[in-house]
Image 1 (cartoon, rainbow, N blue to C red):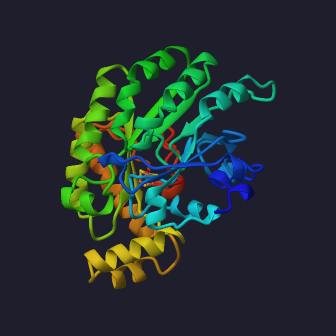
Image 2 (cartoon, rainbow, N blue to C red; image 1 turned 135 degrees about the vertical axis):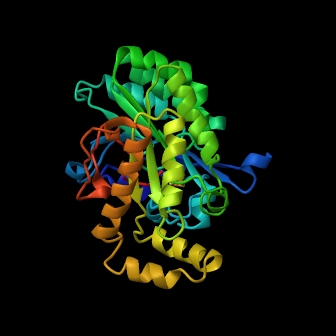
Image 3 (spheres, helix red, strand yellow; image 1 turned 90 degrees about the vertical axis):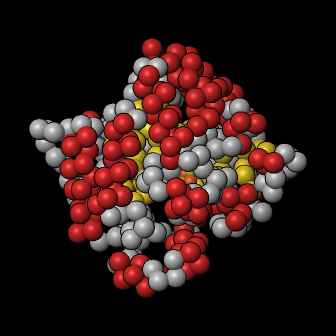
Length: 344
Ligand code: SF4
């Protein structure tokens, strides 16, 4: 593994983050971590600048983990595992890098005179509330450090573990602006089990939305990814938006599946196995590259916004202006959604 030549964490041109002698490798013989290898490292920096930030609704990120046991087949953070000479398929799901010093490092960087207190997005590369967080418990220290400095931040997650930190989120929300978004692309149970096999079910994620809202933390939903031919029928979109509305989400932002190199190969293998009639249709839909064509994206976005208006969600509630984006992959509809990197 290329531990000492890491210059692209979160695709940022940062200095090497850790040295080879700083890696401790562990496995845990408990059912939830069976088959997972953790690489504990002491990172050299933790606040990362997003390259090409002009296309993103955020410029700074904190990611305490790399790799993700949520194992979404379509995840395009897979590509970043190749920077470590790790496998982008099963390796991404089971070789997890843990920056064990993330809280203390963040505290130090936030205190630096060079830091000007800008918004920090979390969950933008991999999920900060993936299962590993149950063991390593890095997020409480991170949230505490941010709250102490009243530094605004946002979190995007599929992990129900975020509820463990509910009180810390409430405390932070009293001193600074925070944003929480949960990712729920569809509610089809069969599709969930095969394409997002390590994640909590969509229903449990929507329970997170419900619970956060009930405790005074507004929560949006990133409806991502909408998967062509598998979760994009009007009936499926309507059912998903209705469930999101019933959970009390403050907003819904649809995002059609991207298939960038790294994710594309893994997703295509999965598609061939589970839906052998679809690869040819995907080849046609994605013939232009990593994104579905704009007409398709507009169709999905328009339908989702119509359903959101019908069910009274956020800016798309009935009677308000409908905004169909030209570039759905980099949307900045309010509130800012930090998810466009990985389709969390
Ligand atoms: S999409 Fe998000 S939750 Fe799924 S594997 Fe990637 S980082 Fe993890």
